[in-house]
Image (cartoon, rainbow, N blue to C red; front, side):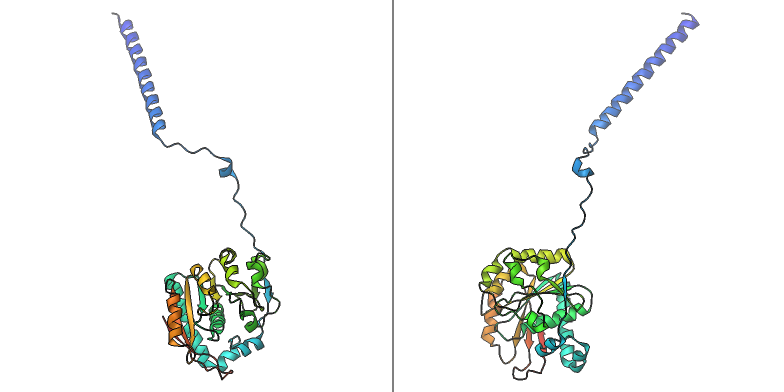
Length: 295
């Protein structure tokens, strides 16, 4: 074998080895590609632009009447609060206690009830809402579901308000019955006339839809619901499963122990945040309420 023959043979062997190496590398790449997770093909939905945020209709603005609030024992103005320091201090304390429970338990819906009529639950609900709204930390919605004796709009002096029952019966939209009051961050829904068949109206799905609308409009809102007395009708039991907790308002000298025990027994399967003891006298209409609070 000549030197030329040896060189040619070596060249051929080298080419063969290079071909084998390239084939082996190609096989390795194919194996790696087969074992790697495959990316999902782009779909039309994936490439479509995100939908625009839902634009909610603005709420109507209404003015709260200072005269109506004074008559109803609602502490609206700074002058009222300065003139009644004991009531002001009581509501500040109540606000702090309630806010602590709300934060600790991550609650956003609170219903106000009482064992019997005239215990001061609506006054409590509105003053609590005002004191929380004034902090301007979160919006506060007051929803009057005491449709047998609606008082929220009356106590605030609101007249140009579309009645909440029209929404609950399917005749109005949420933005038709919710109104922004002259107190920043305080939104109200209520009525001034009584409604028949309140239990059946509240049993439908419209209440859940209203609460969902409020949450969409104001994700961090606190919703305070004024409910009828527990021992008088069953509306409180219809609404109780849809709220986070309930506050029970009693009146010292009026609420009987057996009536309070009956109320607490009726609400036993739900979360009762506390019992508020209203200590004012019924025969002194100019005296504002003061409260004790038991968690």
